[in-house]
Length: 251
Image (cartoon, rainbow, N blue to C red; front, side):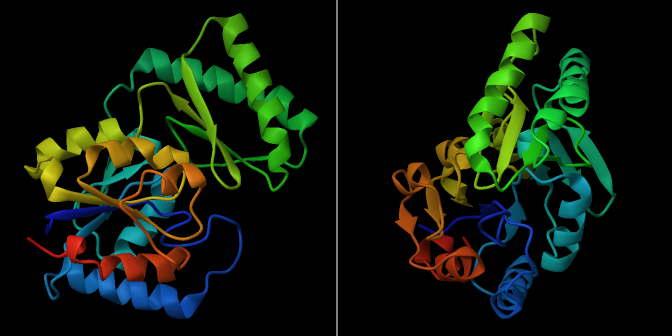
């Protein structure tokens, strides 16, 4: 079942999520493979990115991978296009919701981080928040405190979940799946035209939209259970393996 586009997560797929140097040989092989696909020089479908990372990080990756379609960033809250260097909010993001999210950010900066000094608020995000920590056992208590603050304040309505090292705080209904549905209209494609690659529960909305979904070996169990294919290899090696699948052929 060839497709017209591959939609790929970044952290845990193209590269490790942890703050470590990348394993360069497989990453460079992946860069070359995707660049050839995006230039129409191979039988692999073109690829774009769908990630929780902020725009500046994604801009660099789009230049590396020669991504020519809009990318979905901040977990569906923002679209970014490289040729015109333009960012715009995704579906469901409103000024009122942004004001509420800014109040949550202020609470995190003035209260929560003092209680959890190992945690770091990721800079560069406009419509989603992410806290990085290697002490992931603290995520449940951090989430409880954020939810208590939001309940006392009366909003905004949030969805909070964890990846491998991040606690991600999103506006409810603003996710990768809804952003991809909007992007499908711009690209003129449907469900059967798309394949996806992801590794954490944040990619479940993506899995719901694409016809074929695969994940690398390092993925969370919740993702492995719903994947059409689980690579025996992690990270970039896993994505290279996935791209060799017949379902990733260009239509």
